Image (cartoon, rainbow, N blue to C red; front, side, top):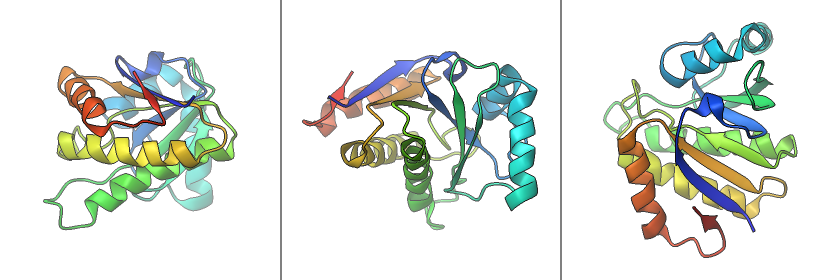
Length: 181
């Protein structure tokens, strides 16, 4: 049975095959979860990001790329760039959906079994947390249903507000074919 877990924790401490990083387009680290992943993962993550930059110039909003996880308990980091919220008039909802879907599809392409996602774009990018959680849940549930290898997705909420939003959504969405805990 495929599973979605919701936890309140620091994503850099989660032992799954891949963690998703809410990166910026430069892939050079930044604040929030991006900075924490780069700091705790060590120089190997930055080195891989620099190789990606040299090859393709970074990562576009809604897209995803993969690096080693360095010193983190995961094997890989999937870096995705979520949109900055500017009132919902610039395709932000579709771009956020793409960030989740493209990250999941990269995990599928690597035949991974487990992947953990942070709350993408809800920090300094100011995406409304309730809407972001709905997009995350529906996109990932859809991908999980259609996926072949990924069996477990963990939504890792860093703050209490996001954790509570995800807990409420899990009861509202009634995903009969996916276990949500």
